[in-house]
Every structure is written in C-alpha cells, then in structure tokens.
Image (cartoon, rainbow, N blue to C red; front, side):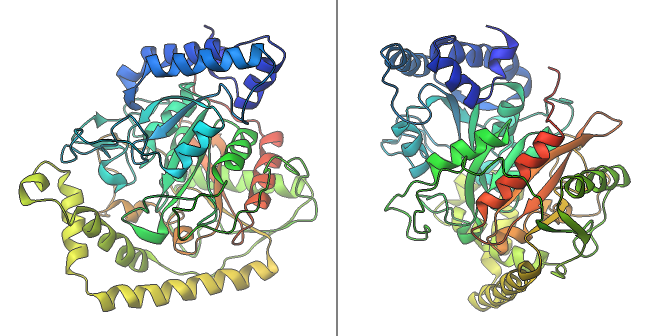
Length: 464
C-alpha cells in the first residue's frame, strides 16, 4: 500500500470508505506495513495485534459495502497508549514489575468508546514506566526514537503515540497528559496534540498522579482530533471526576476562524528561557493570528514559577504509583522513577495540601486572566528534541524533566484545555510547537484556533 494511504487523515479515509474508493482493510494493511517498516528503528509500539486488526478491518469493510457503517470511526486504524486498559491486551505500563499474567478483561472508557465506534485497534504504543517523565524509554521496551532524527528523543510520555502519528502507523492515537505528556512529544515530532479540559474525557482507573492527568487525541490534523474527541468525550459512569456530558460534535464550528478573538501572546510565560530559534519561529507563528483577524497582544498571566507546586503533586503521585510494589520489584524499575517516588513519599500531607491551595490560586488567576483574553499563546517547548535515552538535555543544569518543560505542566495544574500545533522546523531539521491555551471548558475554541492556524500554515510530517 502507498505511503500516501498510510498518511491519509481519518476524515479522508471515512470519505473514501463511503464512496468505496478505499476499504478499511486497505487502510489497515497500509498502517501495518508502516509499522513493519519503521517500528524496528523507532520503537513506537510495544504490542501489535495484526490478526485482531485485520479481523476488525474486514468486518468494517463488510459493513461499508452493505451501506451500514456503525459509529463515527468505523474502520479507522487507531492506537492505544500502554497506560490505558485494553481488553485482551496486557497493559504493562512500560514496566518489568507489572505481570503480564493477568485477566486484562476490561477496557478503559476511552478504549470502550473507540470500540463502540468500530475503530480498528492496531496495538499499544510505548511510554516511559508509568508515564513518569517527559521522554520515552523504559527498562521493558527500551528507547523510542524521533522520526525527524532517530538520535533524538520524541519526548514523552506519549512518545510512542506521537511517533506513530507522525509516520502513518495509524490515523488516531490515544495519549495521556499529566504534565505535558501529549504536548511535549507532539511538539518534538511535529504533530497535533490536545490536552482537553480536565474531566472532558472520562478516565478509569484514575491515574496514580491524580487530577493533573488527562487523556486526549494525538493526530496529524486538527479535524481528526475534533472527530476523535467527539467520541472520547462520551460519558462513562466509572469516572467520578468527569464533566457533565455535553453531547457536542467538536467538528461543528471548527472552520469559523479567529476573527475578533482576543489572543494574548506570552513568549516566556513569565521568564522561561527559550532557545532563540524556537522563540523566533513561535513569535512568527503567533503573528499569523493577527493576520487572520484576531486581536493579538503580548500579555502574560503572571503565574510565576510553579515547578514546586507541580512537584508536590507529581512526586506524591509517583509514590502512589509504586506503593504496592516490593523492594525486589522496584529493583526492576527505572531508577529515576524510584528516586522521585522516594522524594514523594517523604512529603507530608500538609506539604501536599499547601500545594493544593497554591494550585487553586493559580486556577483563579487564570480564570481572571481569561476575562480579558479568549486564548493564550506560548511556545509549547523552550527547545527542540534532544539526545534520546536521557531524561534531560546533556547541556541542561536541571536534574529532572520538569526543569525543561516550563510551558506544559502549569496548565495541568489549572486543568485548562491546551493544544500544540507544529509551527516550523529549525535549521537542524527539528520541529517546533506553538501552544494554544483556552479557558476551562473552552475546548471547542482551542480547536477552532488550531484549525485556523492549520489552514494558514499546513502541517508537514517527517520525510521517512
């Protein structure tokens, strides 16, 4: 099958199924062929179930031939991150300490919705162990690599999903984001990633990292993400934190543009250091919105450095993730994960509750900021992809992944919707992302702005 078919957006695949120019079997075979060609080098998948995928694709093909497709995603090749429960497949979370010998008899809400809409599930994508850091490598499956340059990291923790999206190993991809884990790899690999408002996509079981954690779509186009979010946002009674279902089709109004929208641009979010070439590409991208009729002005919400607040949420979450594992099992784990879990275990309940109060103050500050501004633009990342296999850049003074992700985790703390759009490539051939942040629950507004940018600056995938 052709490279073009593997890279075809889900919306175009569905149009071609409808007119019988293509079949779900052809699309699934094209995605599987790409996996066969590329996964040995890039390591995006920890599990591929070709038999199940082709069986589902043939059933979908039959429905389309009979003119009775079922669901919004019938026959679309799709992947699931290996943190998300999937019936019949082990969810090992990138860990040698998780036994594969379990029933694996339940789908997480997101996977259940995909099945109900008859997406074709190809397999599970790689993650760092328990999704704990902003790059993708683990003791179980090794290092995942960036398709723009395999010596570089794709970021994480949804690095496998990002690589699969960028290279045509499926059209739709479930990512998770507890501090940037959708947006970091989407920026590093030049795709679209969307962390929706907390609770918009039901989750079960809730991440051990708690209420900073989201699920969302990772795709090659904004329209595909809107389609996918429409499915993922359907209700599930197992998520006690879920927002009331709105029954919205996020494709509606997607083409309305940004004319008259009030957009603030914060190039450093209060003082983060940004690589000069990244800063220039992001600033140029921000000006596109003014060209499209938005009211664009440089303005900063004044959040300050929230790394300590985030750490007092994240590190106890790591301790929570590991609390049932024995010392022998911990010896099998990523030493960095064990280290941050030990830091988290030493924090008191009062330390955490103090961070919760400071988080609340951040949320209020952003609510007030958005009374004046409909959207906020920032760089997604202050740098481009660095050497694979390292938690931090070799030139960094920081000890942990939080030290090089100052634009992502603040909006996990505030629970706001935040997307990243690819906005250029450096002279070294590495992609850069522009982050679009909306007020709480304004998921549709973020998607509209992202789509307006995509129309003005079409996205380019890696030449691989």
